[in-house]
Image (cartoon, rainbow, N blue to C red; front, side, top):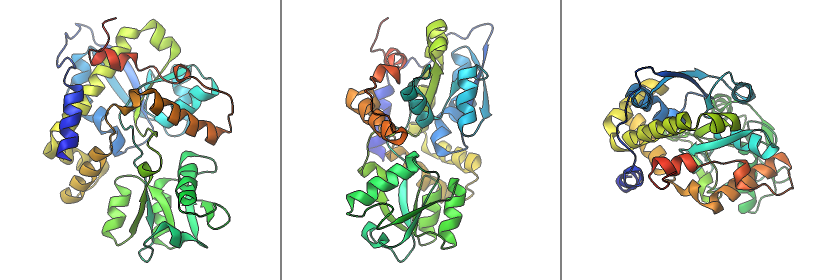
Length: 321
């Protein structure tokens, strides 16, 4: 974990640590889809004043589901953090781009009942998913297939709903297993439930935290986009380098009162950030291909239709223009 934190710090070391604060801060709105560990760097960047250092007065609003994407495209918010939804919208041809990814690796674990010790033991059992054809459904199918099980034949899947509802279904025995992200799987492991698989071992190109903006925003306000990306990266750097303080913030933000448990959540999350692997063309194409499958899209989608990481490159000093 220490090596991971050091690597992140090294990757981001070229970010300007302070910038001129405008006499007049620019008001912007940022939508997040959930209160989750994947949002921690944005929370810290706001708490530490990194957005204000870049001349931005940030208002964060919680907008769940597809409504957040509608708010972004409609201009009700300036930026959105639902990375998976932004990729899906870009694949469909919507005028949005993902300009920053924080978690380049999946955060999901396949969590099973205490008596299960392998994915193969799910044969003849029921697994829970959040929706048909969504990322959780496809990731579950991928893991099952890799273990020789045929989805919806050897293993039955049923739609349960939110992560909280999935965890409840697991606890009550309604399902044998489901995919869950921090802190839920860590809590369930403490209760005796089994870790059957980590989704990142099956699919490396899957974001679970990032920043999306419209084409119009990118074209008309590039300085603002760069400022937002720089401040967010500062938040990530601070998060990776200040473990005790970050754990305390996780505890308060996610309502995890046990600091030891909050520490486990932090260490797990940090180990799965994925660094800057998302800047690679292979990563982008992998994320697009996975999303195309979920949307039943067959035509070729160039990365430039979905991603614009030029602002990350500039923030890291890799581009001069």
